[in-house]
Length: 331
Ligand SMILES: [Mn+2]
Image (tube, rainbow, N blue to C red; front, side, top):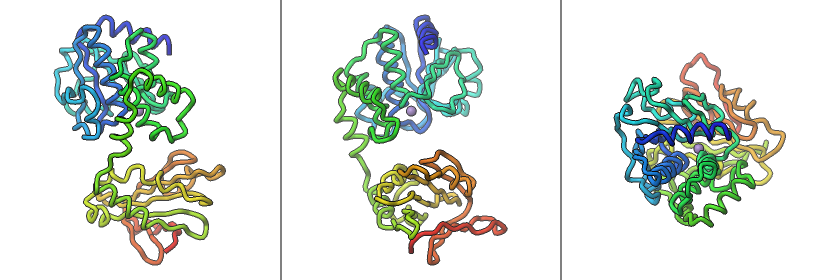
């Protein structure tokens, strides 16, 4: 890592105009990472532009400089591009706008923590053990001697908070909490982060999650299951992505083997997400029976089809030649 830090710093030192790029559908980690760079490098008299191809969600309005993200740019005007939290260059989606952006004319620092990272950068600062990209940035700033202002501390906290599921996922290591503590000490606004990211849910999302809760059943085999149909989305006036996190939320019933949330996606597919807190349950294997994958404790699948309630919920695949697959649930 130290060697990559050294190479990254050298590229930054020799650049004057720097473009910092977030991934599409931006989250707290990619935004916190980009703004950290923008703030630190501006202080070093660099001219820094931040870019993201998608609209920035309203809940991140508390972040400093969040209004400064642009959608369009001429990448050839820059000496360096820094891509934050993108597991691959296509995750920025800018190839769709600027075909030759990754051709190598402008050097790229790829700073990320995804296991799938394909090292697309000129310099790759990739640490798959880091809980968030902002955690790597924290270490890089320490290495490079960049000042961590209260605003940067809030950005680093935001990434940590986002990618550890509010410090609830297994990647919440002692180091994560130590850095988070240091960021609060440095003036990071932890209450702003939790209030905006955690305690900030729209009526449509609350209604949708209400459906998830009221449809929840435990079957004889100790499987907790809930379902959401296209009709539920319509009636709650909710989008599919508002369901994200719901399966983790219901994976809390004592004495259950695992939790499954099935939903239609409005595009002719049924998606299933599995979660467990139990040792000895292999959810990757269960998901693979539906053509999916993942990890032992969290997995999922997508198959073309729809959900139909007979006595039990059943997935009806789109192709009639495919065998009907059902998941046992209570009625
Ligand atoms: Mn991340």
